[in-house]
Length: 191
Image (tube, rainbow, N blue to C red; front, side, top):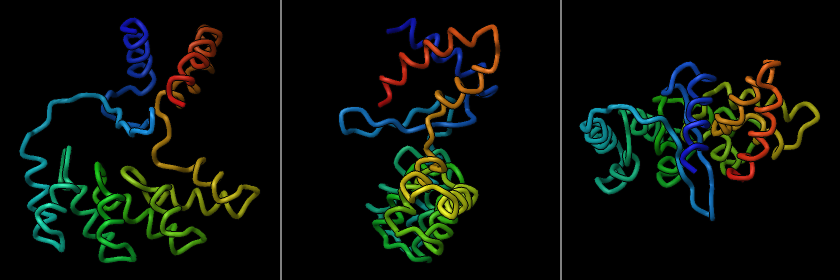
C-alpha cells in the first residue's frame, strides 16, 4: 500500500504544482474523509475561528462544531453569512465546516438556492469548498441538457482532485498508458 501512496502523492504533487492548492472528500464505508495535503498550521487558527463564530449567533458548542479542524476564520465567517441568509443554524454549520474561503460556500449555496435548486441540493453542491462559480456552473448545466443531479455532480466543489489531476496528465503521450491503468485501479478505491 505504501508504494501506491507514494506514487499517488508524487503524481498529485506533479499535477497540482502545489500540495496545498486543493482537497477532496471521499466516502468509504459510509464515513466521510477529508483528504488534504499536510502543512504546518497555527494551532490558534481554530481558536480564532471559534471566537469569531461565538461573537456571532452561534453557541459555544455550535462554534466549536463549525471550527473543528479550521485553518482560518473562514468556517465561522461562512456560517454567519449563511445564517443571515436563507439557512438555519444546523444548515449553516453543515455547509461551512472545513470551509477554506470565508464566504465561498455561503455565496455558492445562496446563489444556487435563488436558482432552481432546493436547500439540500444547494448544500450538496457547495459545502466546504464551493464558490459562486460552482453555483453558476450548475445553473448553466441545468439550463442545458443535464438533470439537477447531473448538474450538481458536474459542478460540485468536492470533485475528486486526484482523478482530475490524472485526467490532465493523460494528455502526455509518455505517461498516457500508465496513467490510464493506474487511474482505473485507484478509481475503485474512491468509489
